[in-house]
Image (cartoon, rainbow, N blue to C red; front, side, top):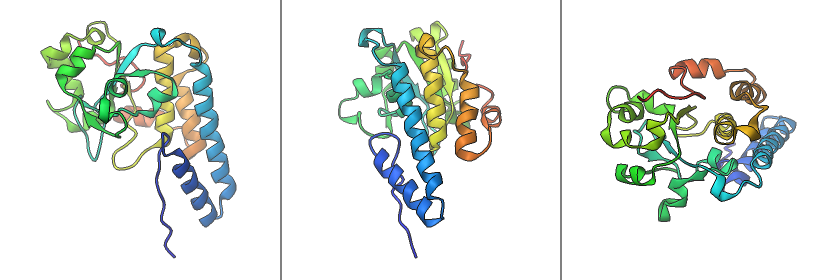
Length: 231
């Protein structure tokens, strides 16, 4: 027998993702586990929404995520307009707000001039970009490109590393771990009880059975969930 699954995502195609979990649970005799996973995802997403509820738009800082992988690593201009961690915490994702026709695509490349014009309050770097190596990765660009040196977030040290979560597929646990770190960064008072690294290991332990944040962070130069030195 062949079972076809729609991978879905934690965004607009969340129902498809949950349906696939249910199908897999049925096929391998783990229906209860599938139900617990769905309930866990929903509980975390609801918690993130509750923590950031009621913040006026004017008080929500603007943000841009660069270096997003898509069928391989990319430089800083690569982003995701529908980036779920931004959506879960109500961040003002400029690639979505100002993206026009591209706002609903999973990956797009933003012109460097546009990033400079936006001048986001916060910059986040998907650390998958480091796998490009040399002068091609997003971190090198942020450190050496005169255009990026003009960005307020670069000059004031508001550049932060987040865990890679996609390539050809997605690591859903990393998406949720990133959301808690981003929430803590943008709204520290709303996440005062959260240690992002500890929360990541709680999520990994429930989903994959092991607390793997430290190993993953080491694989990316220990730059996840911290300020990235760009100056």
